[in-house]
Image (cartoon, rainbow, N blue to C red; front, side, top):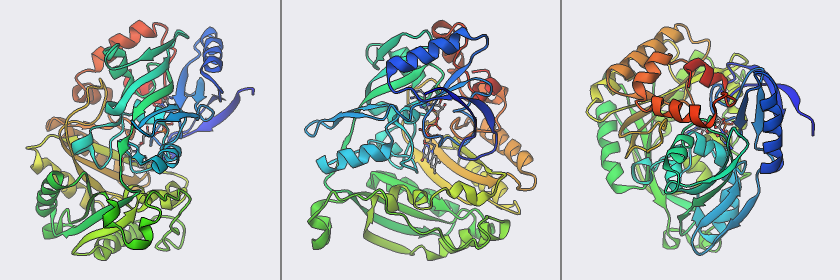
Length: 454
Ligand SMILES: Cc1cc2nc3c(=O)[nH]c(=O)nc-3n(C[C@H](O)[C@H](O)[C@H](O)COP(=O)(O)OP(=O)(O)OC[C@H]3O[C@@H](n4cnc5c(N)ncnc54)[C@H](O)[C@@H]3O)c2cc1C
């Protein structure tokens, strides 16, 4: 199929750019497309999965975008060992559908299952189990990488650690991942046994999260970003683990691995105009907090309810209107709790605070050169682009993060400066050096990498 010129954005819809889009059906076809692009003067290339990164990491204005939509074949799932071999365009949802009947689940799931294996590796994504499971690439045994030179190479953490860990978290800049071998996680059912607790303020939230890390495999806090004063940082914390068959009520025991990816919740009718406004954001935060139980234990939830509540609202990114929204996620080291509190103060002082505000504790850092997670507190926020004084707010957050030894997440970033980024990611020069070796002509380039000179 000939390439088409299309305008692309990330999930936040804020920075469109036009590029040619190719959908290779195999690694060999991708190599041919790549070679043709390389021959063109200034031809730049970047891979793209499902476009769920928030800003412009999967775009390259004026260049060529290599979509993995057709590299979505699952070659095998070994029901004994839980080793899956799949094309890089396979979504986590597809992998769940294939693996759950055999008692295996993806090792790490971000807040949406509409991401590809290639995107999960390139952003080295994290989930609610980061404190015990680490980030995605830790579970990748091997990957097939189409290098900028057109060479197809098998890369593993043992045989080629530098290339592997530059690719994990490398935002598509080391080449196109075409296939991966992944160790899945054993589960006894496809349902999660969940405990929920409502906290009164940021101190209680942080205490409860620390305590839950020791007791549960998955935990996260959804915070009310509008709360101020003595209620600052009040949250609903949901924590859980996959249920055993004995945990299930009798009717559910008949089909413990039932998983219906099509199950969708209705869009909440909180937003009659179809758009989020400062009033509806305040209201949604308030309602979310109030509907949370003070304490509830042992509730059985589906994978969708527990891991991917936003997937239940199709195209929820459109709720922010045509101008779109910015996501912001930081991690601050443990010991910097005062800075976490300060960030809540800064955000809650806005006339239109964040709609989705999620706080969690990260465990061990990933060896990825540009991987985001490191031990500490991570906070994800989102703001409609039209939020008054949004850019000065992001400046203040960047400064706070930098001054406290933290970093921001590339898969969401739309704002950090090159200098600030370099101070946040001490291995960026190793990354640039490796890129210069494998891609001396700088063929792989995205709108994001141009801004940060990656
Ligand atoms: C609702 C929602 C919730 C989210 N929650 C989380 C979360 O909890 N944790 C988290 O870590 N992230 C989260 N994210 C971000 C998301 O997981 C990442 O941005 C992920 O990379 C998106 O995957 P994708 O397939 O859509 O990739 P894209 O957005 O298409 O691309 C992302 C990057 O990966 C590169 N890439 C894609 N495919 C390949 C490939 N085959 N080879 C090489 N490079 C490739 C692209 O070049 C780009 O740099 C969330 C996003 C949304 C929309």
